[in-house]
Length: 466
Ligand SMILES: *Cc1c(COP(=O)(O)O)cnc(C)c1O
Image (tube, rainbow, N blue to C red):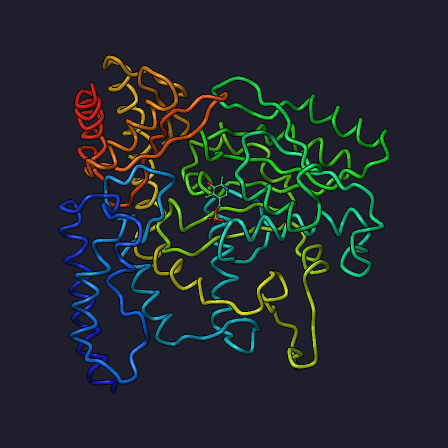
């Protein structure tokens, strides 16, 4: 492809993108394809000779698009959102164009310096005190794994990387039963083991927080048994029902016990740009050693973009930094962000944050988040008032859960029927051993009408099943 063709197609595709978003409500939210249907339309072997872009683009429309679940659909209420605000899309086009690999300061000085500044803008935006620095990672899973590895090395006197794990005894990590599966996986791959991830019971609503006394007792019992408490992982906004731990109590325990602490606020962290939510959900956050939140979820920075704040980055650097000859750089003291993370290669993710924050301003983003929280509460009330649905957990920010009459299979049948209907998209979860239905508001362009329409859709589909 020559650059004239590139510019022709670049223009066409940016028009296509705008039209896609303008007409997206006409599409079913969740893809309506059967497994294997898309693969069956692709050639079995790669082409020996090049094809025209017209043909490639036509196949994209006819083969690929019907198999897309539309995460940018304003009636996407499943999982958590993965917003791609238009200025962040434009930044990603530029990033794809310059295609730098930003592992070291010298391999892309601007990427490194914009990243440092954007982490600090977001620190201020979320009301974190000065002194936290941080790094942008691909996902909360990676940031949590980095934190768990740091817990392991910190608790073992930095011996694990060198000696392996066989001589370290049992390293214990504590969290509540509401954490995301990325915490389990981080413990698996860090060699901690599922059996050493101690999941503590949670108290009642509205927050479903880890019981601090249970935490203290578990730590004492483990020490008495000769185990090594290595880390505490708290959550603000758990995936199932939005559970939020008491951050002040947990960090007090962590500091008293000398245990490294990490906070998973992957989803709810974005809402902390609104100061009014901090009293309820963010008190004590400054006591954590590591905090992760995903601007690629609710804030609007296109996937992927996960920010890990660190109180003392040196601990994570002592865990992850490795400097073979070919990565040494000479000259002034600079930050090389690949030393903070597991992958060496890294994308220029900070540019989309810069575009996003400048284009909307924090106030523009706050308005969206506040609306989502308000509308989630309104829809929850509408469903509560509507026979025969039952609210299972009250809204935490913009997430609540509900149930229809019947057993677990009935809940799943309703979810599947709603998603086959296509007007909205929702997913199921488990609460206290029983299936329920999650409803999460947060798509960047959704309106109050989109959210309230869900009450009609849920009732229509339920009636259709009777
Ligand atoms: C989404 C989510 C994660 C995982 O995020 P990734 O960036 O996909 O790894 C972890 N924890 C919570 C609470 C989440 O909502």
